[in-house]
Image 1: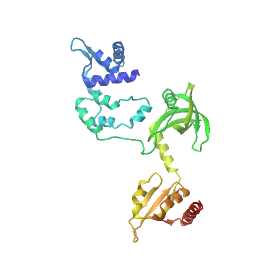
Image 2: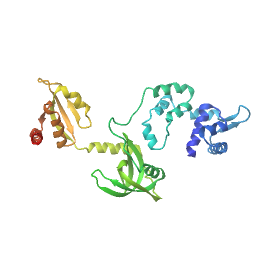
Image 3: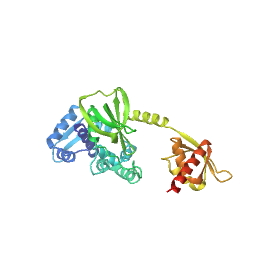
Image 4: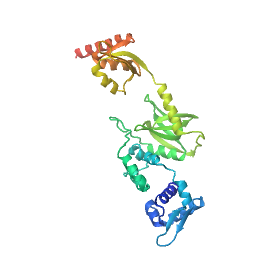
Length: 319
């Protein structure tokens, strides 16, 4: 895209001070004529680029403008190297097999490069989970194009309950949560979230739509996420936990939240409150630990755990 190329030219001019037309053309993989047109465009836009002729000539920015352009601090430069997963960038088509940080490092001023490389070697962010495989999104390119071009989408979507529905939506943005992609879109004037892997087909409509003037993707997503968390079902159980399994309890946060954990009582058991999504999940989870978790309340849950245990014993003894 030309806008990206013009910004790259400005950054290269600032970092290197002076650079020839041929060097710029090689760096940006375009022709010399394209670079000359770009320089005319920058000049027309009010960017003070000047050409110096001769053996040691080249393009440069006027000194007074260069100081204004140098607004990135060392901390800003470090932040640029704390990238999310390169897989997400590849999903978006924003990188090839070469890590873009190599290119960024090469374009940094010399006095920033050592600090940037040190951060790169010390911090790595992996957004994937240990066992979860990456979801395949067959329609991702179509979805992404519709987002870029403000085109309406007709999608065939599988809801959480397994039902499949057809929807006409206005795609506003893509959000990566972990290694899953979500599409934020407007439908009938209401904002909705669609899990991208559940979009089985997507077709762009001819007409464009007008984006809401006050819509900000990051702000909306944070609000949506907070609302989702607040509305999650919760089933709390007061228990006492055997010390031998406390590490296993706190590690399995995917299945249960330890809301409160106290010091061991006289018998050496640890009082705690465990939060589950629902009653059935609590019964099955607690039963799985056998005699290592005591239920304190609700009392009726004890009978339900005992009943399930008896059914399991009878089932296996009859085999």
